[in-house]
Amino acid sequence: MFPEFTLCYSRLPERFYERFEPVPVREPHLVAFNRPLAEALGFDLAAFDAEEAAVWFAGNVVPRGAEPLAQAYAGHQFGGFVPRLGDGRAVLLGEVTDHDGRLRDIQLKGAGRTPFSRGGDGRSPLGPVLREYLVSEAMHAMGIPATRALAAVTTGERVMRGIPEPGAILTRVASSHIRVGTFQYFAARGDIEGVRELAGHVIERHYPELESKQGGERYLGLLEAVQARQAALIAKWMGVGFIHGVMNTDNTTISGETIDFGPCAFMEQYDPQMVFSSIDEGGRYAYSNQPWIAQWNLARLAETLLPLIDDDSDKAVERATEMLQRFPVQYEAEWLGVMRAKLGLEQPQPGDKALIEALLATMHRGRADFTLSFRQLAAAAENPEAEAALVALFERPEEIAGWLEEWRARLAQEALNESERAQRMRWVNPAFIPRNHRVQQALTAAMDENDFGPFETLLQVVTHPFDDQPGREEFTLPAEPTERVFRTFCGT
Ligand code: AMP
Ligand code: MG
Image (tube, rainbow, N blue to C red; front, side, top):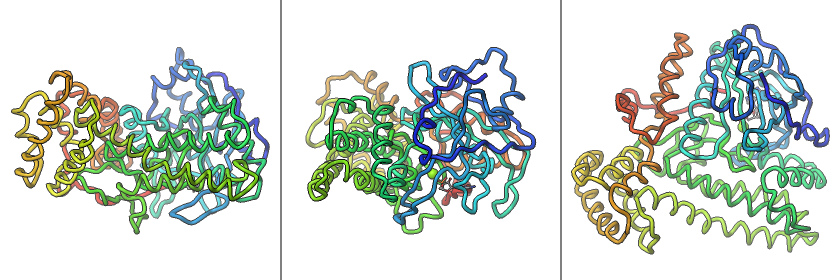
């Protein structure tokens, strides 16, 4: 069933990982399988059998050609440095080459205790596995770079998280699992050759355009390239109200893909200070902090590259600092691009930022639902009568009515016709996001009643975020007060 492996990470020096085989589970059962992704990865599905697939995706049998390993990495967690984290419950089976010729990691998450597990059990409960499955696939469907979910299996075993919960394993696919924390792992050991080797691997894999660069330019170029991807990524998060929740350096990829969907959540009522994660007491990873945390994480990456940027450490610091200081401007350009599109603006104008900020401030004061407001704005772009539904989302209708006048005046300066504009706005303003209460309902049904129907329905809905889905209107709605989710948990 598995495609041929194109091994890559396991060719790196031994100190980059620990070889480790998944620990078999008692009774694997396939509960979700991403057929289109499997096809794109070259899986042979002609004789697909769910029972057989469960055995593979549980790690009970290691596919031919795989060389399973747990990757070493370090990381700043909530600002505090941990020199050795590593895959404590994930196993990289190896890489495969997909239909577009791109290398993709195939990893089993929850596959047993590895040499990096410390006190953990190496396992995952079903809830977080399904949550990651739903949210990562929704992000992908919204055009936001993210790791993918290929399969989920239950293990027939219980994991203890205060109370016993059903165990599960997620098969995760990524263009790589290399993190800022992977660089930090070697830098923290004074292993400059390790950093150099890792950088070479990353350039070959993610940034081949840097291959021709020599000396310090190569590493400065790497910082620049990762910075550009992170700026673009965070702008996209902000555009859909996504709050990652644990933007530690070990959860920040070098590829620019969203990774680790632990306590992440989507905002409903717009509030820039919004925090959902129960462990983020100080609000370090609040919605509006995300760009500056990304910059902070990039500074940690830059530190690891300093000895390679210039032998003269003062010069290296100066060059890296110059690069990092460009982040706010790059980020703002990305963010303006995202937000202009959401407002239906094609031709940049100097007043756009103020117009966007005025809308957000109005949403904040009016306690309006972020996702619904933008989707209704798309409707209003085409049909002024749809404005009433938009205005009804705001607690201060007169404020949004005033803003809409300004917006219409601004649209009058654009060339595009109204229905084309509304269509483009619908392609960037999702109708369906994985609303927290819906995710919670789907997880609860699966965990408590072994009923995967709600999970399957929600998955279907959120993987077509931009389509109007007749009959699914209830999934566009925010939580009722009694359904509202205020806190999310890592639950790992
Ligand atoms: P995460 O919160 O998933 O980003 O994980 C942070 C660190 O804790 C990583 O090194 C993980 O491998 C490790 N970890 C998380 N959960 C477990 C677990 N159940 N068993 C062992 N290690 C874990
Ligand atoms: Mg992590």
